[in-house]
Length: 149
Image (tube, rainbow, N blue to C red; front, side, top):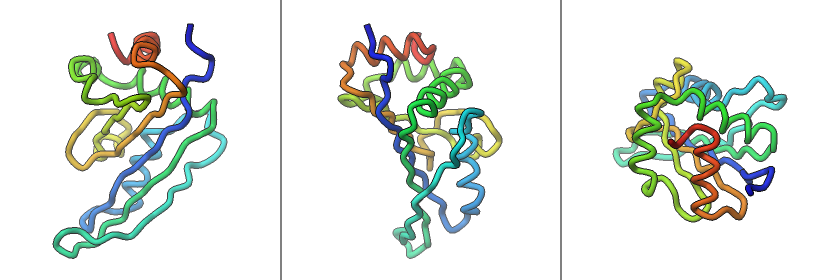
């Protein structure tokens, strides 16, 4: 049997390149993680970086730890992700999981439009850290939530 609170936290990371509007990147992240139960806005740490060719990059990072929000975000992702992305995750699950962490990458442009879609190119990175779960327990939880079949 799985414990009641399975998720410890979710780390969020995304970057805004020189050609991107940082406010739109922030909005895309908010759209991806938005929940009706969220009473607190997501607070980002913004770090200015320099790219390989000297171009400015803003790195957005945040951490979700509220128990209700964690469950709601996971349920939202499970509900809104397309069957094709779920099938891709199922087929490549070993590439997305390491110890008690599930790594997911979402398309920024789609998230800005309110669509949850996987992408490997310049994505919004999520690391979902599960509390003391085994690989089998995480797999079972994600099956129960509808993310894996």
